[in-house]
Length: 145
Image 1 (tube, helix red, strand yellow):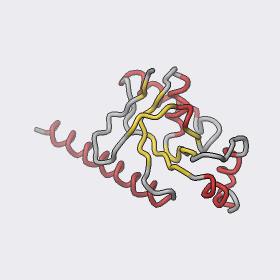
Image 2 (spheres, rainbow, N blue to C red):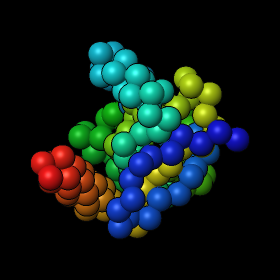
Image 3 (cartoon, helix red, strand yellow):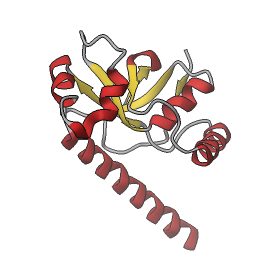
């Protein structure tokens, strides 16, 4: 089994999850130019900068969420899935998910938020951005020495 790993070494716990268990929020890569650049980076670096963010949603939570008009994207995504088990929905990193599939990976490194709502995603996203900002500052400091 081949795993697409990230270079992230921050405070959030990551885990390797089978691509078959993940549900992308979008049905295809969103931006061809970005996707192509991402593919080049992953292939040249043998990994991705950050893990993808995943939210576990219970069948009851999915049913509740798809009732709201703001979640029509989720409704389309889950319309063909059996809602009898918790779904691991990708909320950040859909392009990396599709790229991992294209490149023949069977697993991908993920951060699974501990909350079953978007608050967990926002917190995880904030931590990843702060980690990225600190990493850039460290690289600039080292290069100026």
